[in-house]
Length: 153
Image (tube, rainbow, N blue to C red; front, side, top):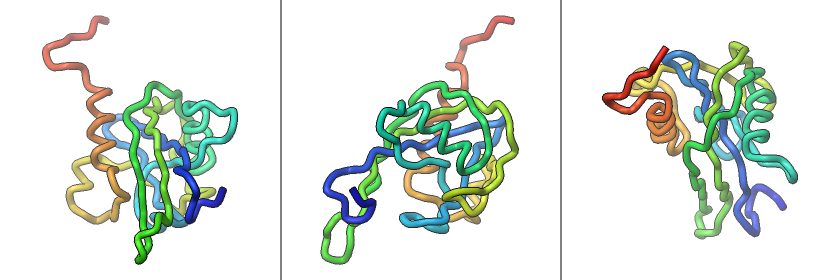
């Protein structure tokens, strides 16, 4: 199956990795979304779990190593051409990864890597792929203890 003008949605994964108060983003080198910032990710391979796929894509695109934690959300990416035909359709499963090692170096499908504080995105200096800010918000909620709870030593 081809990526453009597919006969069914393509299942993919994105790795959402935090280090302290920053989240890892990559600038996509290839369509769709070439030149836009988003999460490292790609297609899931046959026989591969979503956790394994997300962490593989993370390593391939950035060299960063993380431990998969949980699924944050799923995102539908549908792009149509001028005639209304589906040019691209991806169902992306966002996997929260707990950073283990690596600063991040652009490789594979990424042409740049950055650790970004969510507040800095409000300045509008980065052109973001769809749903990036929402996935960041949802993942941050997973990392923050519920209001009023305390952690024990």
